[in-house]
Image (cartoon, rainbow, N blue to C red; front, top):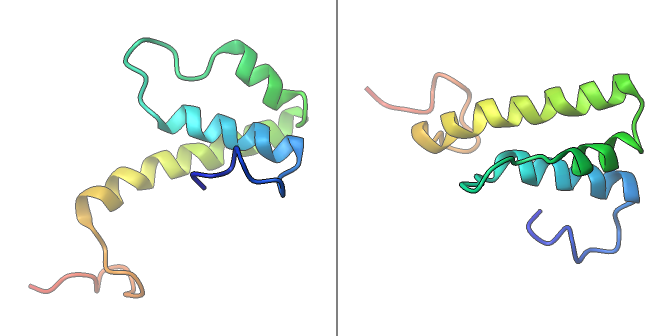
Length: 85
């Protein structure tokens, strides 16, 4: 989704969610990843329940990304059968 900013197919709500995902998962050595203004932009499109669901989806991505980067699973192989002994 590296080109989401230039793509014309996303709604404003989808753009706000993508901005939030990108900010949360990109390191920022100079400070806060998700400023209040960015959170407010996303929250303007989603009710409290939907916002929490979005946050939990981002959290799951954040959990599994390091595992995939470290373990390098083989695409198409079932979990537990990705590696040989």
